[in-house]
Length: 178
Image 1 (cartoon, rainbow, N blue to C red):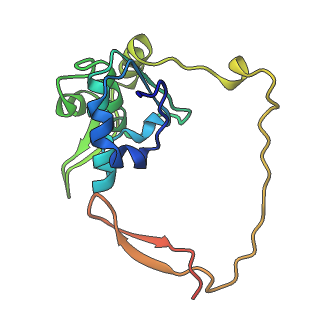
Image 2: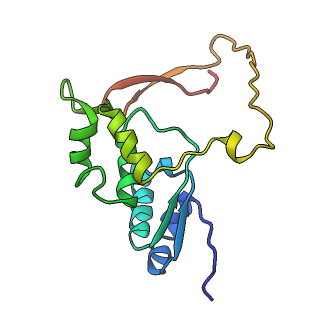
């Protein structure tokens, strides 16, 4: 029997790829859709490509995210292109030329947004609905913040060198004691 509702994690999408792509879906809701961005790893790329391929044949698609838009506008392209192909350009390169600051030296890097007001207008008009928690869930208490002080002894964290996705060098704390 075909299930009426299927809830699946991003990791399981990768594992159930052939079964998910074989079915005809009436509606697909993608929660945490901000993860559908330019992939940073091979596994992320496979998950993203599977979800995008799945969404291409579906008449009704809802992408949900409570996470604010990133500072890299390129991360928005794939979500928008999946919902309305061509809205922001023929492909990601068109989008980059129109809406991203590009740095070519010392390496090619796509950075901050240019023409942000125009991009925001397009998004609001065609693909984005923004609701504030206070307008949707009035019964929730206001957000509270608590400052927690931690005592970290010298040597509790050690730094290791890693390579960033853009080929640079970065220090990161791995949280492992010495």
